[in-house]
Length: 102
Picture 1 (tube, rainbow, N blue to C red):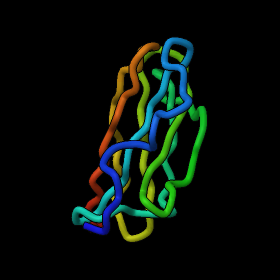
Picture 2 (cartoon, rainbow, N blue to C red; picture 1 turned 90 degrees about the vertical axis):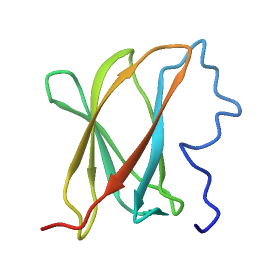
Picture 3 (cartoon, rainbow, N blue to C red; picture 1 turned 60 degrees about the horizontal axis):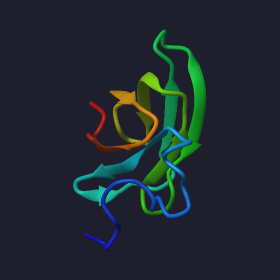
Picture 4 (cartoon, rainbow, N blue to C red; picture 1 turned 30 degrees about the vertical axis):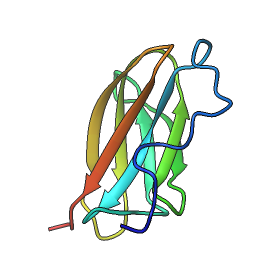
């Protein structure tokens, strides 16, 4: 592996008592995927936000507590949906492993 930290970005400076954090890393074959896109969809499937992954494959959302879907899109990969349950007071760390598109 190229030395990327597992999970999402550092939580230094984030007040988890006041914030609800959904974060993680996108990988393919165990390596981070930069410039993928992660979408945040609410419980009804409605688009809420989208962020690109960093060069180290990491992403972060500040969201309301509740049920969310992370939809990950990247070139030459199938779309991956992950259901997450977010709560104020702790970060949800997600690893999304991409597979080659069929």
